[in-house]
Image (cartoon, rainbow, N blue to C red; front, side):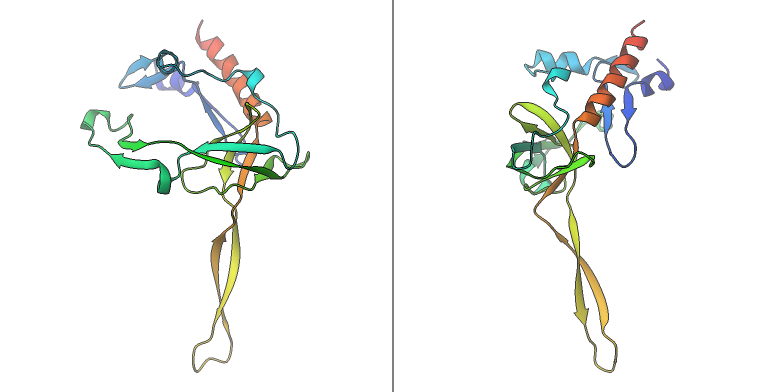
Length: 194
């Protein structure tokens, strides 16, 4: 299979939404096709269907949880890999971390919603669930620019310094955009099966 055909395994969103779908039915590894989805199912994993995906959380205040891999808590260790496998296999031993909270801000006109769960490095891309349905994907940890002033001797003006302060919330894109990307990828996969 050529690389342009392998590129059909990906569907990207607009930049401001920051999502991508990767088909697990067709993955090119070391020049050979690999059915990663079949391997996951054989290990007992259950795939989500479009019926398991809601457009967005139901309301502000709804109970939600996300699954993520923040570096500080999820990484348990590392092992050495054979040089041949370093391009397609992770060397980090990790377990997921669950973050529980509530929908803090939700509006029909916004593509994203806010949760009162912290997001840290490694949380981006984590699914957000409400009542067993996927309602979003974590894309960002909001920061606030905090102004810090310092005055050095001999200077008449104050020098303004800024630092970023993390806010204990998570920004997640609504799942309706995931559904759109999945439907596009499903069509691409069907065309490539012919």
